[in-house]
Image 1 (cartoon, one colour):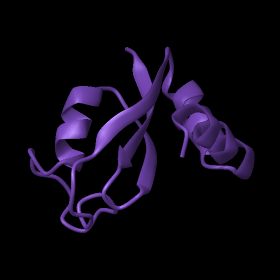
Image 2 (cartoon, one colour):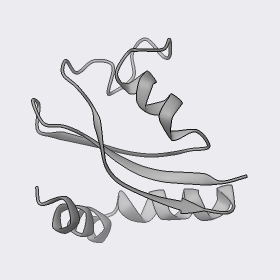
Image 3 (spheres, helix red, strand yellow):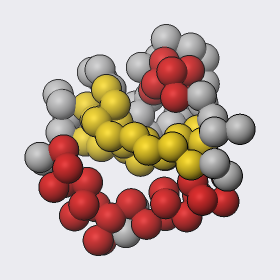
Length: 86
């Protein structure tokens, strides 16, 4: 199974969210409230459209979780800002 680490961006709110999933299309639909999901999640509280700004695939969930953790770190966020130009 493939796992995707992703960064979604809400340009209207100038916010980003970092996560991982095995189905990026379905997960993006949940972020945009097109599919039911958690009622009080970070992205569901934000009005506006979420779009994929960056993604990378990993072969194991452990790799994806480690990469997500890195991207949420100070250095990882600097990498993301450089990549997406925020």
